[in-house]
Length: 449
View 1 (cartoon, rainbow, N blue to C red):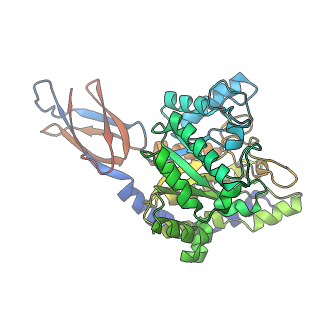
View 2: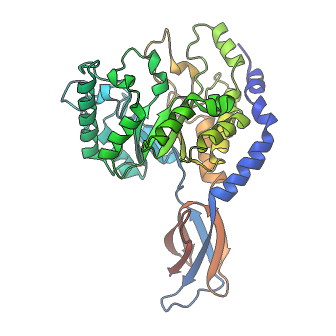
View 3: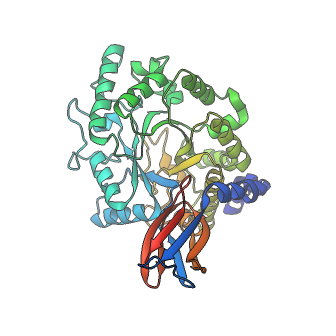
């Protein structure tokens, strides 16, 4: 097995070589596109300016969404672990991907598992349980996902196109009845470039116009929601294939035909070791890795998809850990920072979603063939204590990309500052007020104390 030093040399090589992109392009974009000017004026009850007083300005939330899947909500045997998971999630994330996999949402025809007290299925907490937790915790919830032919119920007439169209429409209708207008966004279709390898797909996967059909149906039932396309790892292929990338061409064609896509989602899983059956295979996989964290390739892939003129989202992220040492954890944290810096440093990326929160609870349908747990891609240990990667993610959005200032009002009661977009509090003379600093808004605000 490779030692931590060898792993670092392989996996941080590209980031070291392209340090200029992290300290140049990414930093410049973050300053230009993630922050804005804000002017506050403080007055007393008579409208007179409050002059020469110290003002403390503290950012409370980020407009940029950074989340994770919430598949382990209340899924642990221990109530203490369930409580820890709930506390950790709202501390580290402001967005949650909620599972709406059809095979587990409606395992028996007509018996949907929307309600909180629905029968439990591992890694598939009931949607209402998840959405209610998010609403109580100030977290946005996103739906994953409406059309995903890899996970369809066994009872469906899978090869009957006309029947499947009706069943899918009823699925959309039922979900919209409960959640239209209630969620941050709706993932409409997922991983259709992967369907050739599935044994479970229905006749819907054979549709020539599957994108247009899926998004037209979604627009019918979710007319006011953000409708998202989601596909497996495509940033690095796009960087290498330019505009001949299959995913890019598929989206380009669908958009020209009028598909109502609002956002392009691309996954970024590095599942090193998921297929390895012995140490030699694992070491070979590690030796060939690294390009998933190449700033040059990531930027180029993002630029390709941004050319389609829609906001971008990194919908599912996995960063592996190559061992149990402090050095291994530090490397995972460093790789995470490279990826998040590039994506936060691209003006078209609006959202980033990490995938599995704790180690040991990832998707592993058949450990002889595929075991995501082997990647140790969680941000937390199996016992739910944070790894260095979780701490790094928190520091990025709560320290590095965060605004906390002490200012003094001028002769007209004004303070002016440049801060990251989000919600804020301002305190002066023991009195506090809330305000928002948001892109494309008039951020000149008068506060009466």
